[in-house]
Length: 180
Image 1: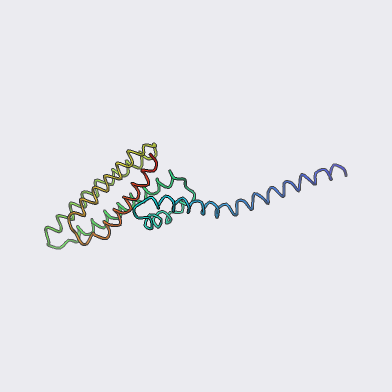
Image 2: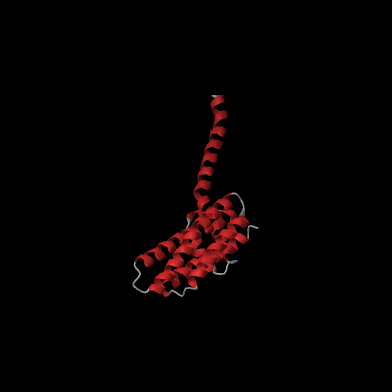
């Protein structure tokens, strides 16, 4: 009987520990999400378009548990995705272009610029993973140049999509700059 009584405190300690771990795991996502949200907001306040930056990053659940480096990687990924999305839009416009040759020519130029930017930003992601943040920055900067070149074509059909891409790219560059 004495040996059974000496195990009771050990059993209680194990039960309390398990309950405590359960509560911590249950509430951890909320704390992590609040911390992630604070990091997103403080980081995006340092960008040119903070509200758009917050919206873009909060759309990725990984941002809520990321540190600044992880948050920056996600921003570069978002920029790459937006670039590909924009390229698809431009490609559709090229394929459906009317007989207006100057407009078609401008669209082809935009498609070429965006098409050459895709491998550049993918190389920038690889550089990022190798902690070569300056090289990653330069790849995102190259995309910015492509957007500006396309925007100079004066295509009204691309104004909105170019503006969205340019703002995301500029915010990503500002966030990347925080790493070096």
